[in-house]
Amino acid sequence: MSVETNLEMPFSETPEGFVQPFYLTGERDGNKTPLVRGRFARLTSPCQSILGRHDYPASINELCAEAMSLAACLSTTLKFDGVFTLQARGDGVVRTLFADVTSAGAMRSYAAFDTEKAKEFEPTGPAILPRLMGGGYMAFTVDQDAAHGDEARRYQGIVELEGSHLGDCAVSWFKNSEQLAAQVITAATKTDDGWHSAALFLQQVAGEGGHDTRLSEDELADEWHTAMVMMSSATREELLSPSLGVPDLLFRLFHAQNVHLQAPRPITDTCRCSAEKVEQVLSGLDAEQLRDMSDENGQLHVSCEFCKINRSYSMADYLSA
Ligand SMILES: [Zn+2]
Image (cartoon, rainbow, N blue to C red; front, top):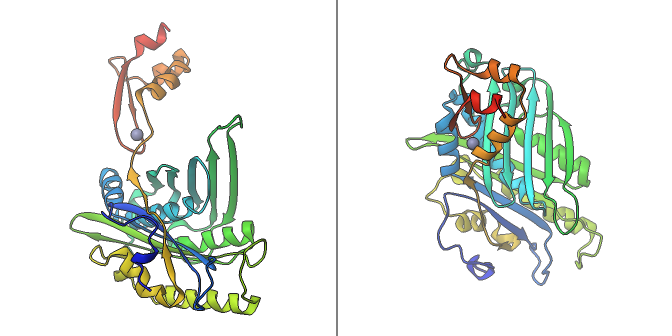
């Protein structure tokens, strides 16, 4: 069976940042229901442009690049319209690691860290979480837009910073929240063009609850085990190399388990800041706060943490408002 015959939408042009959803129906012919669900994210231009603006030390770039691919994978495992956020807080060199992505694929990321100490670390491929972040927690948040008469809602899962890599926290979260086995590997590297990253995520599909499968629990466990073995055989080069197409990579890894590709989802470097939002915040400040913020010429300068756009305003316009 070729991968292409399973494509629900042609993978015509590979965007520079995307998540490829897929599922495995297993080694036994005839089964049509998904036994393992997967996501593969490869981010080239979003990582390059976002991290290019930040100008972080290499060890922090590696961590952020991996966080972006992980957030991209996880966001598409959930059905929602809104924003998915991955945020970790630690007591180590890195105090905050942040990546968020909307259901339309607009990605942002930043980190807060001790600049001098961060320069002492080299990228480790993949980033070692305890070394950079120490102890703390990671939160996965979905801010669902208000729609269809429903109010906006927030769902949040929090896990301790544990394990060696970013993906280990995500696996704990899935285990806690959905009682389902999951596994993820992340990778990031720097080329002449800048940083890029990838993440491969697998999740066991619930054996009960309406899935029409004729497989026993043992057979399902077998399929999961095989998928995990194949996943662990993927090399960093395979995950990251733009010359290895995604259908080829997934077919190479999972062809024996009948891999089915679904429509890829683009991920872009798109900030959600606007002049309007900044002006709204400034309007809410009192005179003392405005004076604290202004420079000696009475100008207010507001820089976006994510896209680094600087916006300037005259304090007088807001004092009189
Ligand atoms: Zn911005």
